[in-house]
Amino acid sequence: MTDRYDYTAFGEIYAQTGTTPNNYLYTGQQYDEVTGLYSLRARYYDPSDGRFLSRDPYPCPLCSPQEYNRYIYTANNPVNFSDPSGLYVLVQQSQVTVNIGLVVKSIGAVLGGALACYDSNWISYMAAAAKIKPLLIALEIMTPSPTPCHIPVLFYPRFITPKIGQHINDAQAAGHPMLLTYDRAGKNSHNKRRQIACRGFTGKPQSCDEYPFASSLQGGLGASIRSVPIWEQRLQGTTMSAFVRTKLKFTDNFAVVVIG
Image (cartoon, rainbow, N blue to C red; front, side, top):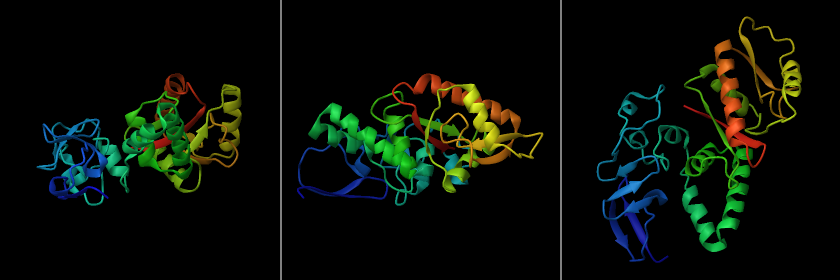
């Protein structure tokens, strides 16, 4: 080890040994020595007062009272959380420090761009299989789909469709996969899976929501079902259609991550 850095809780350096040039400091994020700020992708962060320079643009319907201050870093809890994205959603869902940017940069420096892309794609599949949300969120924010460098990530907005969002979370927690494969056979195939999954549904006049989605190869028999408002189901259809049309360019596999 040639260099050592000691930080305050919010990221100011109070002791340092070594002089190796290094722009990646607190939690492995990019530091601008001229301004004294960290670039956390969505926003700039000032470690001297533990605040971002701009408001968090992300909706926050389930915030704790202190989080209604949209400038604070990691809900004022930097010991237990990190925020490589600069967005509320990643702070809330990160139980571990995710530093995918530094990982990919390191791989790229050693192996070259093409192999770095291959490795980050492989990592994203492992993350989806293991249901590591923070890693998938970081990948998608850094390099939005469609890209050959990671699996497409469907950010499902619980703050817009709360019943379906909660159902997806519960189904994944119960053992259903986060990693799905879109079925391009079309509506007839999708409808057959939906009929199988929702057979015996008694929640009318509400709609039968199924997870894994009937539009995926993992849907159908054994899927989790729940009664949800019809309007949520319609919004879900719109969200999924747009995702398939714009994001599934390199693969039919994708990860479903509930946000908000």
